[in-house]
Image (cartoon, rainbow, N blue to C red; front, top):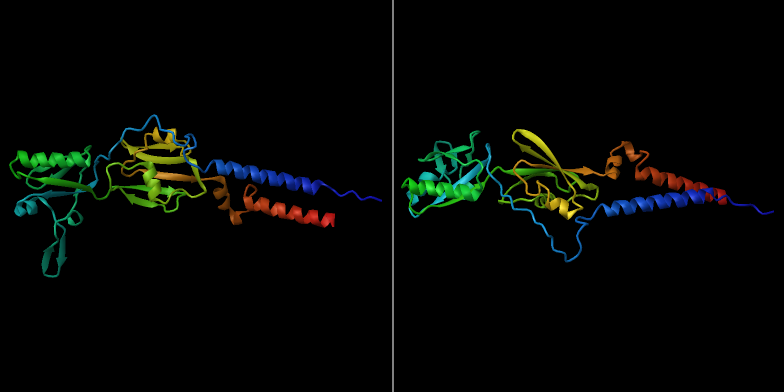
Length: 272
């Protein structure tokens, strides 16, 4: 008498294996950046560089250099360290200057000259504007003006390795620069759905960027970031499912691993 061994458990096991393999392939396809470009291919369109421009509530340092040290001390605002009974001036350098905060009208109150409207200007334009103001008012004949950002930053949140606020220390900061400073996306971050929040004209605007497409990244209006931009990387389904209690939801990988282990155990018992 021949006993026919049931094939149902093996069929289910094959099916589960196929599902796991297909899902793995799908996840793998979503990980690489710039999937629409080939090796050694030049991009036809590059975005126009957009430098950081100053806005109200931004804080900057302004350093005026001259051959006359008395003039330098007149226009530079050193940080004053206060001790009991006396005050000590710190050497005037970019790192030890009191900053100028741009008011809501876009102005700063500069020594001797008075109000200067600098909102909407870049660092380079601001430095040139102050230099011309010093020369035209016969205050300094040979000024060298240096402007630096003090409180400008962007925030990176979500599925990145080092979320946080990062200072803007250059005139042009790209979305890729900010993600690099945050340690890149984790394996669970959605590359095709990165959100950038930007305040413009008193309203919050949302932009979605697909990092798997070089064309989409370079053509995005938020490829060049502005101060106070917020970048959010959404978690994929695998990470979202891990947030459930013990990770044992119907769609979680641990759930299907448990089911597969149970079926294998049952199959072994039946065949034996």
